[in-house]
Image (cartoon, rainbow, N blue to C red):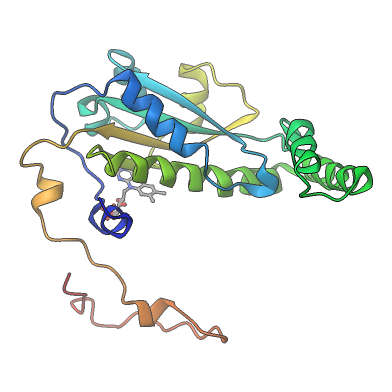
Length: 223
Ligand SMILES: Cc1cc2nc3c(=O)[nH]c(=O)nc-3n(C[C@H](O)[C@H](O)[C@H](O)COP(=O)(O)O)c2cc1C
């Protein structure tokens, strides 16, 4: 599929076919995810793949959302809250490949990352969520490019997720992404595309001049 089509035809799908996603295919998806961008290239993400009966446990922390158990797999996207986790090898690689001019620049970079690692928890949360969200989007695009539908989910109880799946508290549960081949006539795929704001409303060239939403809620885009 052309990449623009992948972006434009992806839907949040809630009805999945009774068909497994093979291990090789799952591995391919994560091979693509590796190339997502991340702050300082620190790749703060971890992916917990939940399948089979374990989906029941995931559903219970996701407020019972039905598509969790309908999916072939669900991926819990977790972000480390410690920016220094992979800092040494990432920085050594930048130095070796000439992205950093010398040891001094490498040390300066490590100092900056160290400062971030000692920042308050909200700063570190935002830091990890930014990169992990892009990785989650890469996962959904890699999947849809292979005909595997997905649904990103923020509707879950993070504390319950930590407890149920033994996730240490220094990892932030960022999103759950359900994955599966869409059911033949999945309502989500057949229904009209949900409203999208027109580009001229949300793109601002040079000057930020946000437009208030129209008072008439019936005015929606036609695609
Ligand atoms: C951060 C985020 C959280 C979301 N949480 C949920 C969720 O908990 N359950 C769900 O069914 N859909 C969830 N969605 C999917 C949105 O409802 C969906 O993306 C939106 O309605 C647009 O539909 P589309 O993805 O089919 O274009 C979430 C999407 C995002 C980006």
